[in-house]
Length: 68
Image (cartoon, rainbow, N blue to C red; front, side, top):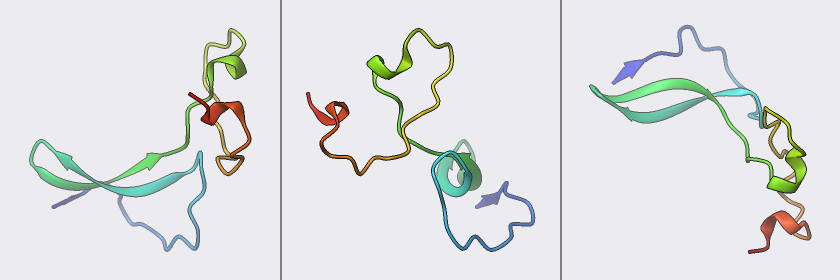
């Protein structure tokens, strides 16, 4: 396994839009890497923006984001 995280300090919590350690399958086997995570914004929330800030409140089940 390859560790690409460097000298990783303890993380008391992990939050959306913040880097967190992730184990993934790389070209040379499993590797530990830091990745930013979150949910993509629904189309109506982007309003012609070039970047996607993402959705942080994924617990709002009443949101139209969760409807098909």
